[in-house]
Image (cartoon, rainbow, N blue to C red; front, top):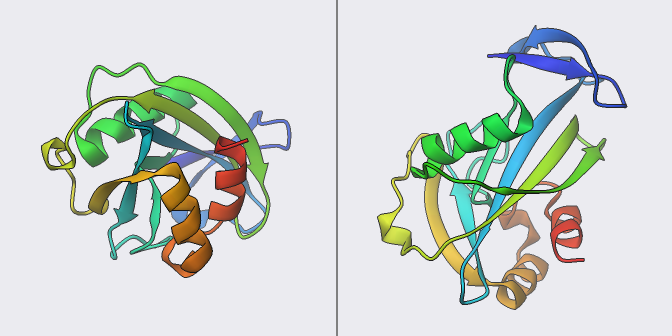
Amino acid sequence: MIIPIVNKSDRIIGYKDRKDKLPEDTYRVTALWITNSRDEILIARRSKERKTDGGKWGPAVAGTVEKGETYTSNIIKEAYEEIGLKDIKPKKGLKRLATKEHNHFAQWYFLTIDKDVKKFNIDPVEVAELRWIKKTDLIKDFRLHPSEYVKGMSEILKDIYK
């Protein structure tokens, strides 16, 4: 996978194969946060085979932007590949620069749909399971079991629930 490498202003300065990315390189990722009319959020447990955060809970959909993609085209592609959503128009949210373990710009997207978890077409290579959870229960569960969630979940919850 060839990914854009960006500067601290999120301008592309080159491209690299993802496996050749250096710790100091900054790249782009997307995440889709899905809610329903019952004020629940859809979270996904990443497949255990995933190199980063395998087996951990996080956003319903997430991906790394590839060469030739925009943030928006990437999240639309990932939503289809990971959980079978198509013809979506996610709302663009906050974009932030994360510099802890990996340097990346994370562009959040939001979508509201009412769909039974069993009706999503999950790609088991990407996603182990999905579940709807109330916002208050998500925050409580994260506080009790932070190791069950993707790295950076504390900052993510602060960003999406300001």
